[in-house]
Image 1: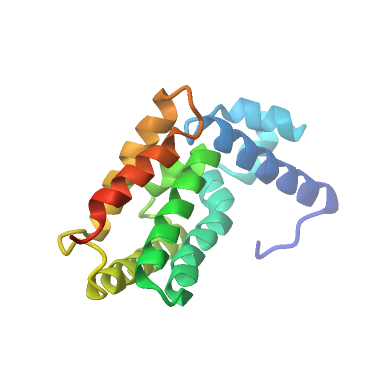
Image 2: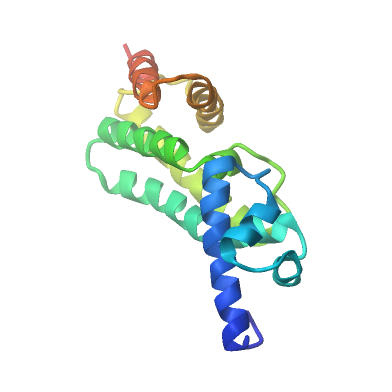
Length: 185
């Protein structure tokens, strides 16, 4: 923040962000703001003073995690085997979905384009994903008609598996089946 916060205000801000990460991770982006304030040990007025809108809070909470999403592609691009890079990229993406409902929802939501920070991170991540896909296709390992937009479709399908399956590891089976179908023949 541009202006320096008092020590108690800074503690409240840190507590609110930690509580929001936890609550959004458990319940998704529509989680109760009252629950976030309660877990942070502050009143609702403190929450709204620091973060006037839900979007402000979400942007602040997920900017760091979106940086991690950008790094997924960078890590995959460092892998010399393009197919292994693609598989590890999708696997890690699905793991993120399985462990953080809020980030999972954010990655398939289009409503945060007006936040420059999140939009910039998303655009960088999408460029990286496109390059991971291109490398696997150029190596003849990934079907030629697969696009970055297909990753969004796969994530939406995976979100359904996560919501509806009693088996918390069911996404791994779905991913194995998907990867088998995506390999170039």
